[in-house]
Image 1 (cartoon, rainbow, N blue to C red):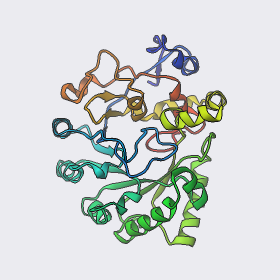
Image 2 (cartoon, one colour; image 1 turned 30 degrees about the vertical axis):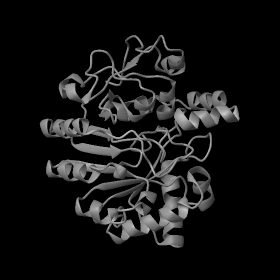
Image 3 (tube, rainbow, N blue to C red; image 1 turned 90 degrees about the vertical axis):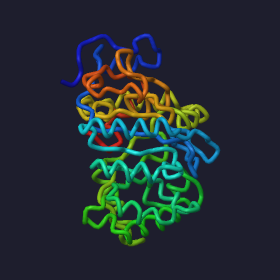
Image 4 (cartoon, rainbow, N blue to C red; image 1 turned 180 degrees about the vertical axis):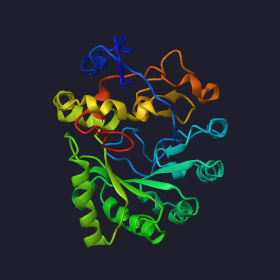
Amino acid sequence: MSVLPLRVLNETLPEARRFARRLGGGELRAFRVTTLQVNVGKKCNQACRHCHVDASPLRTEVMPDPVFEACLGVLDRYPDLETLDITGGAPELHPRFREMVERARALGRKVMIRHNLTVQREPGQADLPAFFAEHGCEVVSSLPHYLQDATDRQRGRGVYEASIAALQRLNAAGYGRGDGLVLTLVSNPVGAFLPPRQEDLERDTRAYLAEHHGVLFDRLFTITNMPIARFADWLDRAGIRGEYMDRLEHAYNPATLTGLMCRNLISVSWDGRLYDCDFNQMLELGLSDECPSTIFGLELERLVERRIRTADHCLGCTAGSGSSCGGAIA
């Protein structure tokens, strides 16, 4: 099952018309949910131009203890949730971040950390590579481009240099060497265009980082810049939002639909509300009405084959080779 010939859930929303048209009046349904993605807060040590979370050092949203405990309680109750995907902000800045990792691993779950690399420079965070390695976490780290100028233009001056140093520390802790400690890099375009072919960029990045910095990694994901939050503001200021949306729509690829992350994932915000994906979370597009609205009422069986809420930002995930938290789809 990929797309059901049912009414479009968001047919009354103007911003949903492009994607609805591409679905041909259909509607997405979820498959079995295997990943619990938890956003523990919007506080970050960086304020990147492309950030769809709109995270920054000035944000104060932090997951409170009741929500924190509820997330771990859900993991404990439902073994089908095989993976805990921890994100932010910089998730490491949450005061109970390490506890979440330790308790999830004790439950036998795979743990993925969305790690921005430069957070290792923050007070008390220098030992993060050793902590990740001790608990067998997969580290997923953003590096917009293997060249310094492109990365610093998007993330700020000095970020590339700090990121390379952090990657070298992860390598020293055993990551990226093919021995089971998985280091994944994430690249997104530095501008209003689609990412290149994932295999090609991975090859070029691997060769450049190894030759110039001695850095090793296991795989690279490409992710399309989503037309929401900070990136959408930049598109508006540049006067090219319509052009970018046209580009996404014209590159729509129906082969990506079966691999969309929203079909096997549930996203939890810092305040406990539930969403189909991290992008819907940032737009506050909650789950469809027949589903629980918060982590406190989560019943996994009610999320299987749920209707997925869509809008035009979904074109970012279905353009070209597709885009998801796991990189290219098709």
